[in-house]
Length: 310
Image: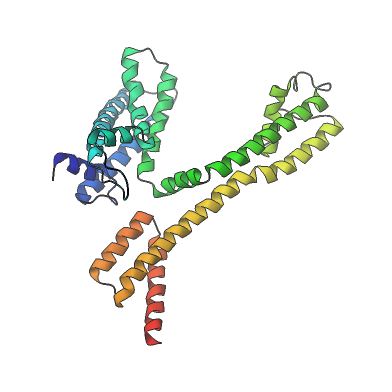
């Protein structure tokens, strides 16, 4: 196996690796640990009156992390040429595969995790901006979190529905801000000084947060505020309902795929060691709970044995 293929399999999450699974799992553990240490170091660095020794240690952690993330990014770009083609996809050259990877969301996150550090060497950067970009490193964990990947898939699938719901919410927020401005402006000209200034009240009221820093004082304003609060519960539940419904559908789709895999393996009436190993790999790829997966297997085995008796 070439060095490029070896790198690709090691850098791939170990559940998806075709070979070098132990090295892939070890690399996953090391990288996840480094990311978590990075986020912890970032939080610690904001503590006031931090001892000098601690500051030096935090800088050392940052330099080591940057070095590791840089090597990781370069190897991922290099080894992306070894990525297998999906079914019915056009054949691509190594350069096309690498460019496709560079444009992918995870590659952009990997790049943004290291780019500000190198830019700061040549350009004067506000340290607060660098810290904000360091927080982006936590998104590198998305490569190893099936739940996060499922959520991203849900958002992609429901993008049009979410956009429509958010458009309605934006329109309703503007209407609420406009109405409260004309109702409360004369009574509180400093608080509700303009419609843009009233948007803050409309947003926190519609989301039922209600910080209390801006409140209506007229009778009509209070009645309108109560109405907006009740309507906000209904309207702002739309995106949550869309996401939860789609997430449930995605999880059900995974269970259905797992059932199909088990049914196929049970065609000959029993599960061989190869079948069990294959089913376990599918379970891990679909990120199903072990107890739930074993329950599905037992139910299908019972159903299969009952069918044979009849």
